[in-house]
Length: 232
View 1 (cartoon, one colour):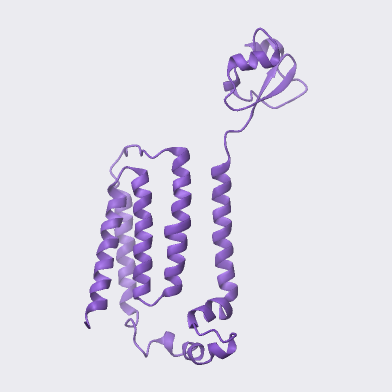
View 2 (cartoon, rainbow, N blue to C red):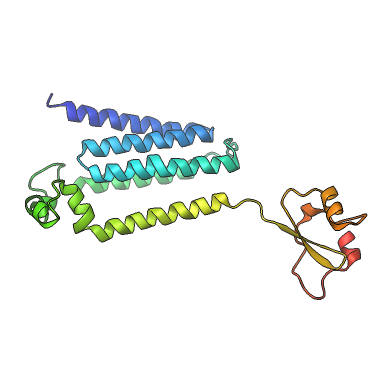
């Protein structure tokens, strides 16, 4: 039983590695989005095992929740098929391997995980554990006290950043085709997206009308194109 936490860690890390490789190899974008959501969910489970409940909550809410919804919304507009790559990704693979090697080398000086004499446990951690319940409205959960009070401004900033990113992406996704402007018979007309040439002729009451698929031919100036130019 003493080895059970280590076994869980190894299993979760293997699942992360397998999921990451699958995301890289797969060509169906819908399946890739689902796999990234699974990756985030497994990461959240790994954070829970490491007693980082606050990070696990953020990963589950943002990585497996909001990000998956936004990616699915994007696929609804762009489709789920990925074009075949035109070259072998040797350079990106090299950059990833070098960056990973540097990160692994940097962990060599990190104190052992869970050690009671680690620097993080020698300063404010003891104060949080002993006094947070009395200082922060008798909240028994230390993590909640830290997130909601001691680092409340940081938490509010993180929430504001996530909210702003979500609103920005939703605005971009909700922006449909824009109306087009065509010049005919000395006047500018606004044409709704999807208007056909026959509908344009009926709207203008003319025998011949500009092609609405051509869009805006130029700025609206007093010396704009003539009717003959508009008819082409």
